[in-house]
Amino acid sequence: MKPSTKAVDMKSILIQSKGTKELARKKGRSISLQKVIVYILLSGWFIIAVLPFFWTFLTSIKKPVDAFAMPPHWIFEPTMKAYKTLWLEGDFSLYLQNSVIVTVGSVIISLAIGSLAGYALARYSGKSSFYLLLMALIFRALPRMVFVLPFYYIAKMLGLYDTKLMLILVMVAINQPFTIWMLKSFFMGIPKSLEEAAMVDGCTRFQAFRYVIVPIMWPGVITSGIFTLLLAYNEYLIPKALTATHAVTMPVAIAQFGAENIKYWSVMAAGAISISLPIILVVIFAQKYLVKGLTAGAVKE
Image (cartoon, rainbow, N blue to C red; front, side):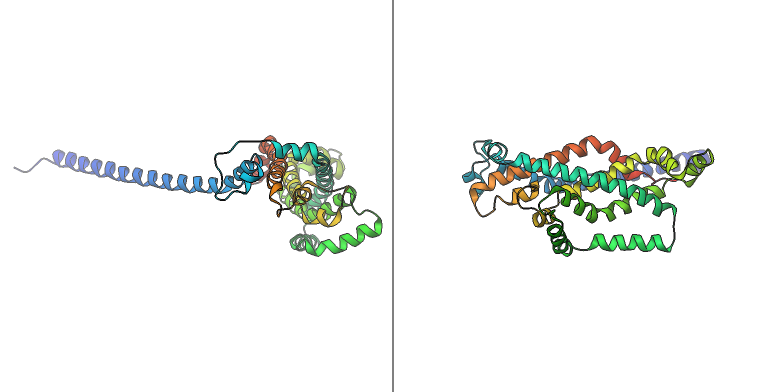
C-alpha cells in the first residue's frame, strides 16, 4: 500500500522542522562564538587603554626606590608623600590656577567667535566660504613648531611674554579653526526655516540666531567646548615656549621635575594623575550633552 498524502506531508514537515532547529542551533553557536571573540578583543583593548593610567597611579603611591625597581614591585607599602610634595611643598596649585584660567578663557573666546563664524559659513555657502574653511583647515594642520618662533617674538615685542593673556590669545588662534569646522557641521544640521520663521515674526537675523538657533545648538556648543578644552588644557609646546615662571601651566610644570632624577618619578606620576582628574570629572558631568552633540544631525526627519 502506498502511504497517504497526509502522512507524507507530516513526515516532510518533521524533517524541515528538525533541519530548521539544527540550523538555528548552529547559528546560535556561531553568534555566541562571535560574541566571545568580540568581548575578548574589547577586554584586551580596555586593558591596553587603562593600564598606563593604572601604572601611573601605582607609581604615584610608591616610594622612589619601589617606583624605579626592575622588575616592578607589585607588593609595596603605599605612601602619599609624592602628593604632599607636589601640592604642599611645591607651587602646583598655582600651576593649576594658570591652567584653569588659560583653558576657560580659550574656550569662551573660541566658542564666541566660532559660533558666529560657523553659523555664517553654514548659511552662506559659496566659493569664499569654501576657501576660508580650506585655509582654516590648512592652518590647523600645520605643526606646532611653525608657530613657536613667531608667537615668541610677538610676545616679546608686545611685552606679553610669560603672561596668561598671551597664552589665551595663542590658544584661541591655534584651536579656532577646529572649533569653526565643528560648529559649522552642527549648524548645517539645523533647518534654515527656523530662523526664517523667526525673521518673518519680526526678529533680526542676530535675534533669530540668539533666541532660536543657540538654544537648539547647546549640545553642539558643549561638545565643541569640551574638545577645545582638551586641546588647550593638554597643550605643552606653546606654554613651554611662551612662559618662564608666572604663567607656567601644569603640563610644563610636570615636565620640569625631570625624568633623569629617579627621586622625582613618583612626584611626576602624582602630577600626571592630578592633571587627569579634572578632565575626567568634566567628561563625566558633560557626557549627556557630549552624546547629544556627537549624534546631532545624524538622522534627518
